[in-house]
Amino acid sequence: MKSSAPLIFAFIVGIIVLLSEFIPHSPFNEIVSTLEGWFMIISGFAILLGQISLIRMNTHKIVHKLDNWQYHLAGLISFGLMLALGLLWGMQETPGILGDATGIQAWLGQKPFDYLFENAYLPLSATLFSLLAFFIASAAYRAFIIRGLESNLLMITAIIVIIGRTSIGTMLTGWLPESLHFWHFPNLADFIMEFPNTAAQRAILISAGLGIVGSSLRIILGIERSYLGGDK
Amino acid sequence: MKISVLAERRIIYLVLLIAVALPLLFPIGWKTEVSGYTQMAYDLIENTPENKVVIISFDYDPSTMTELQPMGEAMIEHAFKRDQKIIATALWPMGVQMAEQAFEKVLRDYPDKKRGLDYVNLGYKVGGMVTIQAMGRDLKEVYPNDTRNTPYDQIPLLANTRRLKDVAWVSSLSSGVPGLKEWMMVARDSYNVPVTGGCTAVSAPGFFPYVNEQRQLTGLLGGLKAASEYESLIGRLGSATTKMDAQSVAHLLILVFIALGNIKVFVAKKKKTTKTKAFIIKRRKSND
Image (cartoon, rainbow over all chains, first blue to last red; front, side, top):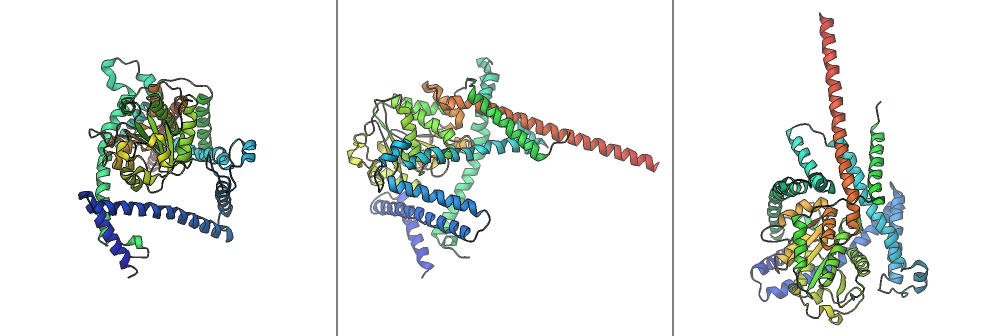
């Protein structure tokens, strides 16, 4: 019963949602609307579950002093700090348990949560993503080597797209007459994106779509059971 | 002279840092050509009548704000210019703050625009695609209050907006899932509401197939370049325009790095061939 109940539930819900797409009338409308409400509530609890899991995992690593436990401690302190500041004094216009922190606002210029968000989280997050540029530059130098016909084609395409996607493309070919408009680097880049890229992307999308249909049917029919956990 | 891999890497990082920093400190002012995708998104907003209610969904977090925030600001400014009423939503938790920051910046030039009358921030809702589906049935059910806890019914801008169908267009600024694709699948495909949006340059190729004759997406802003194109279309000297110089120089530098990497490999190969040839000749001579 423990394993068959979720399978029966998945089958019934899956069939109802599937049918509602083809029969958009009562009672399917109401049932699907209720199911959507359930989904949002469960998703809300999933966030809570994620937070509990995060605390447990980090605490375990800190208590047992596993590799790089210091980083996990920093993560946990940051998490606790933001949570506490948000709960105590709220964020932006929303007050917290202790009100609006007028005194602290006069000193910091904004609420503690907003201050940390803007001056710590925001620049740190953007910096981490920006580091990608350095890795890309280094990888391009070491890995983008012409070795055969395919890599040659890739190189030519990459050069056109890179130049076409910058202001340099406009500068280099902007002087060309209107009759040669197609040969402007930005237009060449757009052409590559619109035709060869789109063709390849569509093939991938269609394959992925068919894969999703297949795996969804497997879940509804109870063939795919990995979501239940365990080995089966 | 042989340079170690680590030293090479450090030189690349240093040169790139200088190449990005200099144009930011001393802007060059290069012009960009407006692409068809950006023009299409611009036309959608430009041709929407005044007083129509629109949705801009901030489906990203600070990690991608360099590319997406200028798009958000430009689209808000464009909608304000056309006197359209903006509903801001977020499918990502940090999107709420991103929306607030974008409004705050644009409102400096539009002090007459009022919260609740001209724009509203409904905040974040968990659930992704299912949330959008629920918005298609009843917006108030999904968002009973805005971020300032004002009840839905007390927000004048939402008086005649009950479901997704009452909205003139949707724009999702998206850096992943849930985002633009989910909006397109529900708002456009199920409710026939025009959907446009923006994404990071790296994910733009995946969205281009949806800008098609069926208008699944009405235009697309892909990366910082598209954001700067949009700024030029609405006549705004925003952050995308100034950052575009730095990006252009960085891209040019990457091309130089690629060329240098190839030259290095070519020279190494040539040396190896010469050495092998010399070795074979030497061996033949010794055999003779």
